[in-house]
Image 1 (cartoon, rainbow, N blue to C red):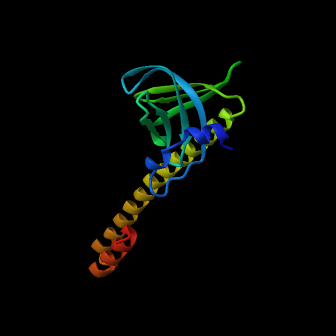
Image 2 (image 1 turned 60 degrees about the vertical axis):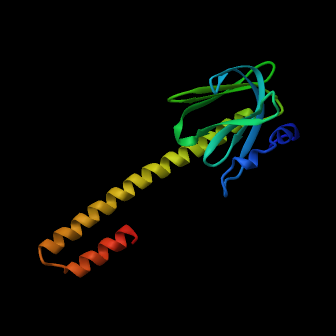
Image 3 (image 1 turned 135 degrees about the horizontal axis):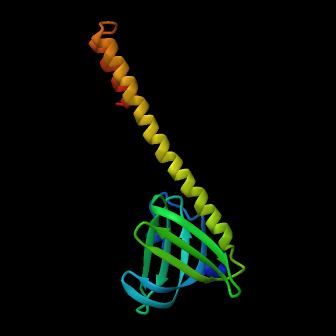
Length: 168
């Protein structure tokens, strides 16, 4: 459940979401370090989970909102750590990392991480399935091609099955 404080910090987030993209969960926190090649110090923002990505949105000193997006298929790890002053979430990709600290204890950072991991598993499973399914289609087309070469089926029958398998 997204806290009132976090909901209040999520202004303009809908502008960067896709047409059918919805918010699964969100937590607010602080980052220190470098973001967009800018040195940051105690930059407050919101970490948002959607079915496609994790977004860190924050408000710059000039009042404009900015966000950093992490597609779920690019996240190699996401971890949770509970501290004395709040929780921390560390996101790692092959290119970059983000550590959000001081997440209020009343916001369930651990649940956010569990949900994110669940969506990552789902996306990787979907990608594996697509790869397997396309391999199966190729094998079936090869089988029908062999039947055509042997004269067991006609060219029209082969073309019909090929289009059917390819969804054309």
